[in-house]
Length: 347
Ligand code: AMP
Ligand code: MG
Image (cartoon, rainbow, N blue to C red; front, side, top):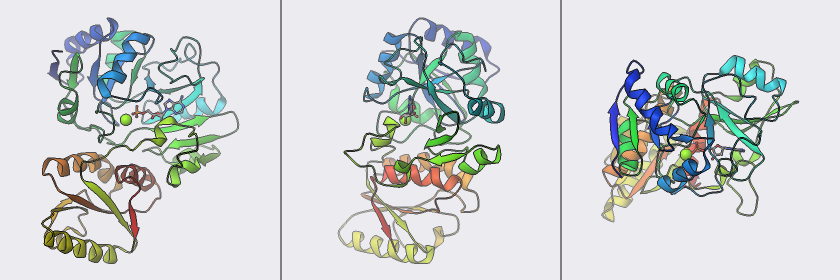
């Protein structure tokens, strides 16, 4: 398939309208959002959405998020709980997805046969114009080959999906760099199914009662049916085997230095996912600083790009410093743990 690539921003209406035409006639468009790049199709067109699963190699039991540009979502859901209204008022447009009871308009393929649908209004202006001009909601997972780190730049999306989609648009780096927070919204409470930039504290600050789904904190159990299907997959994974080293940071650095030496003696190259505070403490190895520990927002924005960097230089092993699982750290560690297939060493 020929893939058209347009580098553009929100001021290039003509090209965004051309992309919208592709969506309208059942094609696939990769577009930027503030979380990660998305691989979009008309959410009301089952055949169009089927192409998403094929292009990504995505398992069919992993549902898609429906992206909207209008606050009136009543066509797509059975009812809107008060809690959902609060979330919309406070955080939409933005990086939070709500799981609500679906209406019959949303094809079962989109929700992987669940009776709920995940809906989000992105804040990225190109994304919103694309949805508006298409005149339909856009179903979109992240624009990567299934299992790889999510794309946070247009280059990542081109790397994975060139020749597999009709069009790729964008150019800017994603502001948040991690996928949206996913919450199941009921009348009495809200449950975080996937942590993201909108944190538990932020949801509590607007008066909501918030649970964190236990599956987020522990290693997934093969026998347990997860509430959020995406929870069970190895995800975001670089090619090299990755280990997260948690515990006191000086001990983590010592341990990683020991590993660099040990692997070097076996002729293996170690990549280190380090931070600004520690990068100069490593001896040998391929060191990439993911950002400063005082700026978790930037670490989140850089994480997937850093994982893809390690792929490019073909390291044999990756050792990554861990972060505290608080605030945004919960979302960062959630992606890192999956990337590492839950290979974690506490020192
Ligand atoms: P992605 O588009 O790759 O960011 O993945 C979307 C994720 O949203 C899925 O992997 C699920 O974790 C979650 N999700 C989407 N729809 C639902 C739903 N109906 N119920 C629960 N989780 C959902
Ligand atoms: Mg994804």
